Length: 136
Image 1 (tube, rainbow, N blue to C red):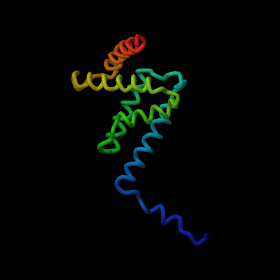
Image 2: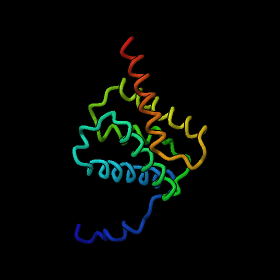
Image 3: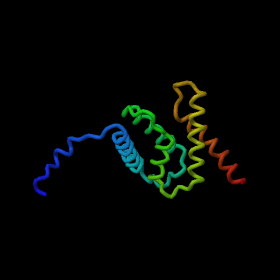
Image 4: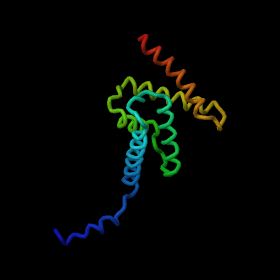
């Protein structure tokens, strides 16, 4: 066993899908750690501002990493589920609706839209969605 050269293994890099998988995993770990640094982050489940913040982090890191063909919603759900593992399917469905709504607004608003406007509109949308869900 002592004749093994472990350093030579480090020289072998990931290719294609393994590299992509590894990069995505690294992004998830990084963003989960970043959000968990927020004081009392556990009190922010279903907080629209936190949802917007995570979306902005994902957008920025994907631009920086130059990864292509990444399902941002799937990535968001993976990150969010690790931050708040107790999140129910109903809550995840609501979060997906909020994100889709924000993307629709973003397409309708000028390119230089500020995220606070999107957050305000998402909050009002959330109130409508939660009102509808409570009626059913």
